Image 1 (spheres, rainbow, N blue to C red):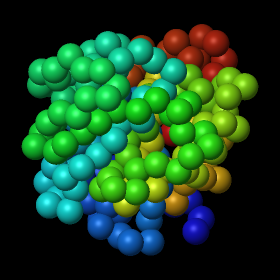
Image 2 (tube, helix red, strand yellow):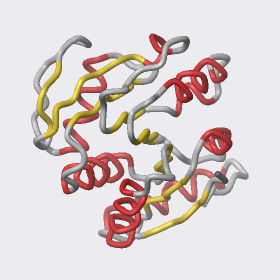
Image 3 (cartoon, rainbow, N blue to C red):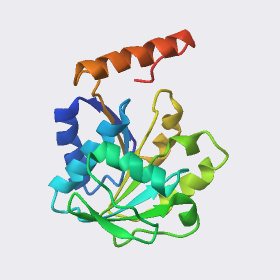
Image 4 (cartoon, one colour):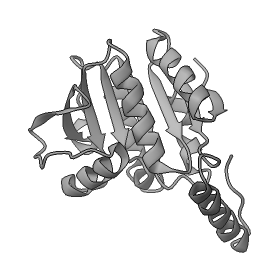
Length: 199
């Protein structure tokens, strides 16, 4: 299946993401966007809204467990208990556990899961581990495998496109004044470096 790339503001994003989650032909979905917390919040709330999704795995990238916990708390606006990798706990009424992607380069995983959420994925895209990371993506056997970018201000995430069935870009630049200001700062910083935003 070729990768479909679509860009939506929040209301349309939610509608389209839910369609993809329920589409049996779509297995791997990449979520892009400039505002990391917005992506996490909407992805989790869409999963929560659909009764088909109850058990999931968060596949953490090149980060530590405490840092990922902070990231989730900020994005989900809810307290996440302190945890170890072997723990399972409840987020938005769903049972979640955590694994590190490097532990699944050679072994399939997630057969019993409704979803696997790869987060964050950005730092591995530029590194020498990228081929290994792609092997882990291929080993993800959950019903839906969702990858969420962080610091997505360049074209690096396009390296993932051959491994993805659909890409959704969440556009929250006009959600409020603060986002509009942040977006303009991001734009001007890139222009100062003679770069442009990827979408």
